[in-house]
Amino acid sequence: MAMMDIPLNTWLLFGHAPRYFPDTEVVTRFADGRMHRYTYADFARRAQQLMHALDVLGLGAGERVATLAWNSYRHLEAYWAVPCAGRVLHTLNLRLSPDDLTYIIRHAEDRAILVDPDLLPLLEKVHALGGLTGVRHLVVLGDTVPDTKLPGAVGYEDLIAAQPGDYAPRDIPERTPLGLCYTSGTTGRPKGVVYTHRSTVLHALAASSQAAMAIGPGDRVLAVVPMFHANAWGVPYTATPYGAKQVFSSGPLDPAALVELMSAERVTVAAGVPTIWMSVADEIAARGGLPDLRHLLCGGARPPRALIERYRRDFGIPLIQVWGMTETSPLASLAWPKERMRDWDEQRITEAVRIRAGLPLPGVQMEIRGEAGQPLEWDGTSMGELLIRGPWIADSYLGGQGAAQFTDDGWFRTGDIAVGSPDGYLVIADRAKDLIKSGGEWISSVDMESAVMALPEVAEAAVIAVPDDKWQERPLICIAVQPGAEVTLERVRQHLEKSGFAYWQLPDRIEVMDTVPRTGVGKFDKKTLRDRFGA
Image (cartoon, rainbow, N blue to C red; front, side, top):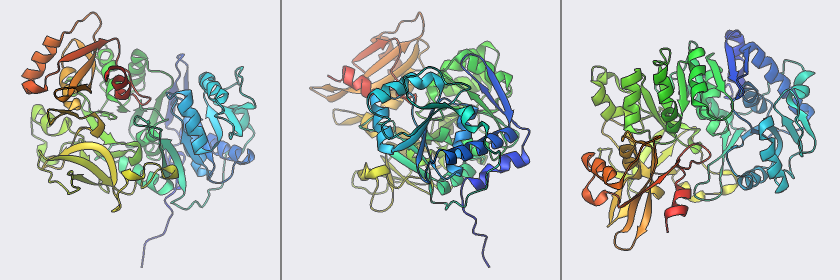
């Protein structure tokens, strides 16, 4: 006897929400303050109308359908309709340059693009560079089509209006490509990561668990992390089949509007990068907290310890650190305490758990290897390169790029330098390219950033290595101060010394700026800082 051989494809998940949670809401707040509400029953009908529309457009099986869009209900419809109809969803990063977008659209061989109206000027710049030569269809995700230089644009609502609201499920083999997302390209041209139906279903099942995002039918979930990057951490593919209410904030970040939305919709789980949670903390404090919020997920970079402690101390909200990459679908580990830690005081839990990148999810295997390629002990001190493998981890890049990141024995080289604790918790010491080697000894830029951002006058801080004739490299701290505040090198050095940094690790120089530049996914853009100050 054996188990039923049911393909792990998106159809296995798609029909669950409209069948069992038809009245659960999907809410979108647009940048101009407009609100849109509908139910999972409405969502499923419209998504199936889009499936038919893709057929009418003549798009072949496996062809790329790109989105250049903010988080919204229409983007959610595309998330499901494109793969369920047998095409590949390619989410384009709207914060990339026209040159990078041109390269990516060509490299991916996109044949259709769904674009938000306010992003048409960006796409016009791509068109001027010849980036749309292979694109046959352009669909504007709005009620109408604004004036544009782009030829042949059609309105999304017009496209789907006459289509039936039901679509016969397709028998899609589970290893069929489902989605495509490009890395942020901080060390060269962006590289394409292809997700399959199988990997996405397995990731969704794991991501909902108490070991991961802990999302269920009673939750109201807000993914601040953009839908154009790494499947919005898998939230749309996790919240939808489990019937959680989804809340979207569409457009550029407005901290006050975001907190108002979280309060009004009684959000229980939210996900975003550290810079988001830093920017909204004062807004949360101003309204006396968010009593419905059960936990925050924080990833993309290691959150400062001071930020973790503030959310717990001032708001009673655990900030759960998440680690992952575009190549890992992206969830790989999360920092939840173990059962035996239940009676520990908060300071002890913070030290042992919350400042770490977490425990690997079941199904994800991790190794930390030394310079000779040998596995290192998870002893809390041994530092080496982090390698990872699992059923939702990429085994190559589109077109064979970056082959050196994949080992002959089936592991992905993350490029992160890590330490494993005896309890199994992962600590990301730094990106390999961001470590500072001074006088033959290593300095962690992440540790230094976290310490500096504990200073009350510091809003943001990024640490880079700059060349030094005597010591090879020295740390330079780029600091954005709080409004009306000032900071000096001596103040920073004294604080770091009190925080446990050795005298030889202390910086010789700081640079004060209005804001620290960020990449397209919200991380500090150290490549830009190195280009500016590295000489």
